[in-house]
Length: 115
Image 1 (cartoon, rainbow, N blue to C red):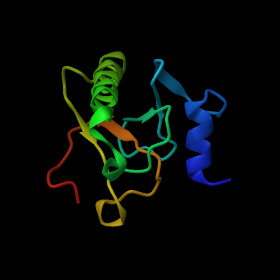
Image 2 (cartoon, rainbow, N blue to C red; image 1 turned 45 degrees about the vertical axis):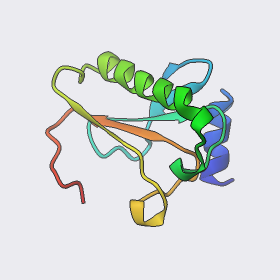
Image 3 (cartoon, helix red, strand yellow; image 1 turned 90 degrees about the horizontal axis):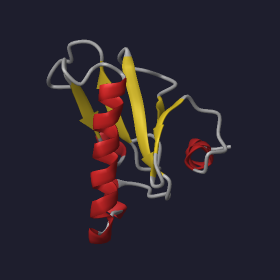
Image 4 (cartoon, helix red, strand yellow; image 1 turned 45 degrees about the horizontal axis):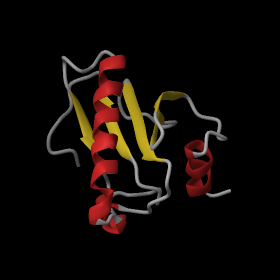
């Protein structure tokens, strides 16, 4: 099974994931390969491969993803100290899973540039 199929299962509520937030349109779960003490992925329930595949009609969905990220940060106790949100897009952007996902990373000081 591909990682995209695993994400699709999680989006449908069928996958084995440590879910920390969900709504009608998005699901947030802990990354299995965390890069910081808090590393959560926010995904849309609808499969969208990359940022390049978004349409103007997806603006509300993107807003909901960022609202979910803010709530995850609050629940995880990193809202006050700070956190980073990241979309990777395409191979040169570091995207490995072609189901749109927003990383919420924090719990330690983060460096810039990221890499």
